[in-house]
Amino acid sequence: MESDMHAPLFIDGQWIEAQATATVFNPASGEGIGTVSRADAALLDRSLEAARKGFAHWRNVPAHERAAIMRKGCDIIRERAQGIGRILSAEQGKPVAEAVGEVQTSVDNLEWMAEEATRAYGRLLVPRTPGIEQIVRKSPIGPVAAFTPWNFPALTPMRKIGGALAAGCSIILKPSEETPFTAVELVRAFADAGVPAGVINLVFGDSRLISGHLIDSPIIRKITFTGSTAVGKILQARAAQGVKRATMELGGHGPVIVCDDVDVDSAARLAAKSKFRNAGQVCTSPTRFFVQKGVYEPFVEAFTAATKALRIGEGTEDKVDMGPLANERQLKAAESFVADAVAAGARLTTGGKRIGNRGFFHEPTVLADVPDSARIMTEEPFGPVVPFQSFDTLDEALCKANSLPYALAGYVMTRSLSRSARLSEEIEAGMVVVNHFSVSTPYSPFGGMKESGDGLEGGIEGLDAYLVSKTVTTRVA
Ligand code: NAD
Image (tube, rainbow, N blue to C red; front, side, top):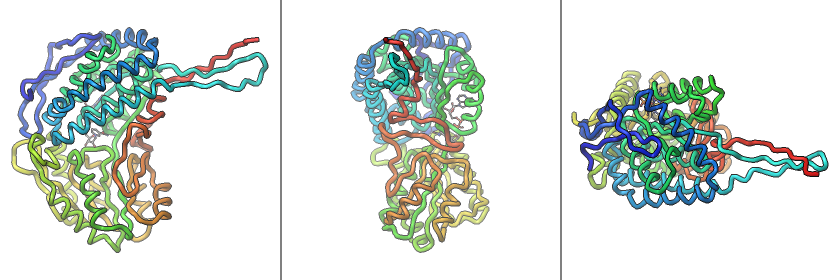
């Protein structure tokens, strides 16, 4: 199953082979495991026409019926979760158990949206003129172009498919060409569940060509992108040319403020587990640790011990905590962050180098006393490398935490209610998490501030992102 896979396109209910293909690699071995079709402009035009037709039909399907079809898709994905998780692990690198968990979480998200679809109520206004009735009606915004990255090959597409389908929109999904096979399986499940032709379309190819072509098309009414801030800025600017709504889930560099009243061992263990999930390739990952002076040394020591205990291996091996990095770029980035920080004077307490020369494995790495001048203090690491600094006062910690253009997730560890209240109020972030590291649920809004993004996914806000409000005023008497 995990070699010689192929990812075709899915347009207007048909699986389509493009003439051009690209190779997909297994990051644990560095070897090719299959190919992905690459759409040309003509195939993109077909996907646009399909999305136009799919929208005209799907927007008129009653929300309860849409929800029922979406739930059926979810049931099918749940039944196939083990198989899809193995595919996800093979193309992305994370341990199979984590990959299966991601598939299940993605289904939870979509199911929640399916339910929420039946509650897009709109509202009845209180008119100021007798004989007038005024309502606000919620309608789907229109065909959506969605671009998703390689770090969560199931969860990010499912969040976007969930919002779009629940609202009554059609969608053209362009997942990462580095992890196409999971997306193919998700789309296959929805096709098997009876999602009508044209409602979900799947394309792969040249990212720049596809995003330009789709965003510029008058058929597309909304863009949703998850990926780096650099690419997000380009897509948002392009969307603005057509005054199109753009939801941007971009990079992060999550500060963690650890106060001197914590239980050092348990806090450090919890933090290390969270930091190295998905080998640190998570936009909400806790990535800049600011620890109060009184507990700085013991915290770094306990965090280092927890890091050393992690088991690294191929995703398919049993009892593995962390797999390889997803691609060679991330491996090179990790090596370069470590070299730069050490040259700037950081103290390496564990890790620091690539593991072997097969695949893209890198040791989970802890850097203490990292100066502000090290690149890792300002650039998103997106890998298994974590910098530590100490602080004296909460003012100082907040100043450090809020010093970057990123503002996605922020973390606080303290037993003091007043510290927790102040820090969670003053950290600039779309999500603040106190004394744990679980950032995202189906029912809570997920998104960033500043250059970490614009717009939200998840929660009632996540459905609203695919809806427009129309005011209808009627003289009834
Ligand atoms: P990238 O921004 O080049 O690519 C991220 C995703 O965007 C990929 O799936 C890619 O196919 C797509 N993409 C790239 N250019 C595009 C374009 N012009 N139009 C449409 N889609 C486009 O990032 P990368 O080289 O894969 O990773 C670099 C850094 O980006 C990482 O180190 C990390 O900091 C960040 N990143 C963040 C996330 C996130 O979830 N926020 C995800 C992936 C990468």
